[in-house]
Length: 119
Image (cartoon, rainbow, N blue to C red; front, side, top):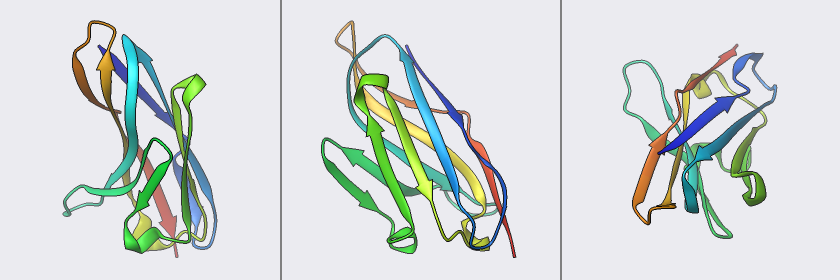
């Protein structure tokens, strides 16, 4: 079983910055991809950014403002969010996929962290 613990959310004014962290622990053999999703009230959960190997991808609305990075040694993924806008307000969820020590595929979610951007 693989657990994800997120941190770093909070309240910030528009134009400000926040850095989210997500640490994976448990029966991990390989993590193939890690990513951040978000869900605003009344909206579907959407992929914000993901990193697979050395490749990254972002939803268009955050390109140039958000940066995803991964520390493989620590099984941790980060999301640096700059120039935040009120429309970035949402609960942000970490996701990881890979293979456990018992050679089973896994896909895990964090508990979510609230990001609120005031105008």
